[in-house]
Length: 107
Image 1 (cartoon, rainbow, N blue to C red):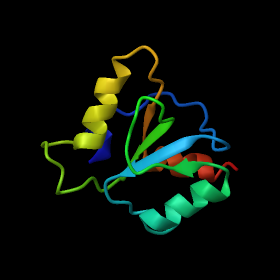
Image 2: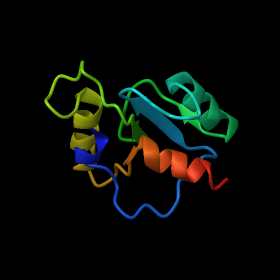
Image 3: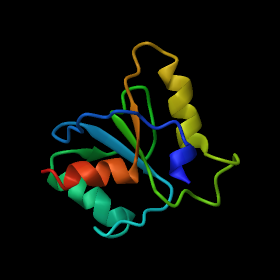
Image 4: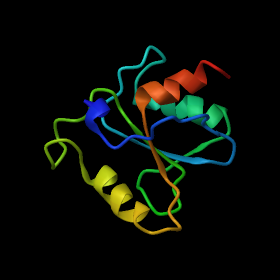
């Protein structure tokens, strides 16, 4: 589950306008499936990226994880982001589906 992953603690806000998001894992949201979540992010001014880079703003981990991940707890997108975060210029925030949804509800 995503709760075992290296997600941001004490997240105060999520910005959407002109921010980039990459989604990984399977989503179980009341808002809909992964595509529906992507559309909500776009509607709020964010962009969706298929891959991670050191310039990505948010990596969102689906609550259900993914049985296809290459590691026991996470996959390449998370691994790459963790490696990128070792670079002081990488400011990507790793967040859970629930964190994202909590801020969608506040909008």
